[in-house]
Image (cartoon, rainbow, N blue to C red; front, side):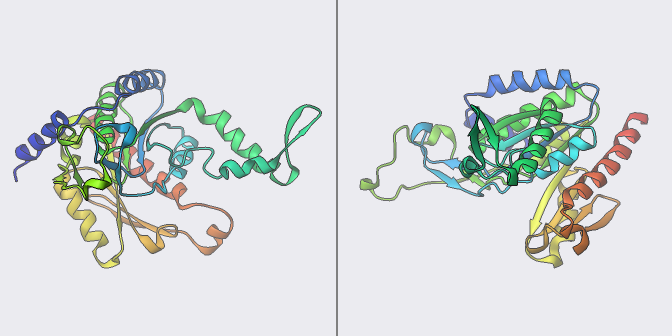
Length: 311
């Protein structure tokens, strides 16, 4: 299939699938955020897994779940520390920045009431204080946009890319969301809830067009694009990453192996391969590999963006 045919398939996807109900509000939110962050570099981080609705009525949606959203929100704190602002395009109800370590409803057990004031117990006070300090320090540099379905994600991703491409010269796209390979066009979804009494539905899935090529070439040609590749076979990781770079013409792949993803990753560009490794001492001290990933991406992307500005 030619590049033109692939781009046409991508456009057909947007005509077949409706934007999310919060699309206009999200667009306005991103535009205002980018305008307010003009003096900083902005990173778009995508995270979480998409769903594929089997019914048009979202109130009774029966999704195909593709990934439970064990996300890479740790990267955002690393980007904040490096001076960047972050647009976080995430799966609804997935892990969130700042509160990612908080234990949800069980956190109520940490709280007591003393003299009419809510107090955190001594054992957890320092931890909650650290989370709150990070929130107060960085929250104004965070713009969160959520998606649920595959169509939501692609509509919002394209919108964010177009805005970033036009409004700022220092933008990095870190594409780590787990995206479905198949979908059902909105116009072909049943309007009402599927009834189990009618037996299993006859579903015809369509292949999702590859959107990375139009993203690089049309949506965000001025941005630095990093994708995320997870494999289970170490022998094919580097070759798969290089194939992706050659096929889609983006800038960088962060490659890792499922079993060792917290200890080591590969940073791969068209001219550079480097392994990032965490020692046992670093892991035991509480350091996280995301700090090293961000430092490397920042270094390589800054060099690239400077070169582009001088061309």
